[in-house]
Each structure stands twice: as C-alpha cells, then as structure tokens.
Length: 79
Image (cartoon, rainbow, N blue to C red):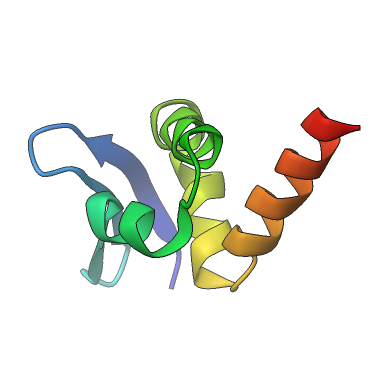
C-alpha cells in the first residue's frame, strides 16, 4: 500500500490517511488526546503535531511511539 494523502480534517477532528488501494484510516484526535495527553503541555504538543505534521502524528501513534515522544518532549522543557 502506498500512502496518497494524510491530512487533518477540522470538521471531523480526525487525521485522515488514504492509500492507493482505496483503504482509508481515520484517527480520532480527541480520543488520542484523552488517552495520551495528561498535561496541558502534552495537549499543546499533540495539537501542534496535528496541525503542522499530521503524517508524523499518525506515524508516532501507529508505531507505538506517541507516549515516548510526549515524555521526551516534556523532559526537554524541564532540563
């Protein structure tokens, strides 16, 4: 499968991925935030990713690295 598009849809609140075989994957960003963002800063970090780098957001979530990303980013700010 080859990824054709990856965009954040403000109306649905989802990152939408479309593949060349017709497969579609919609990531509910509200549900992701509820699961992973435990601080205001983490919510801000997720929002930045969704609006500025939706592909990276999807990759981090789908490969299981989103929590690690949020924790590392938080640690950088406190040191």
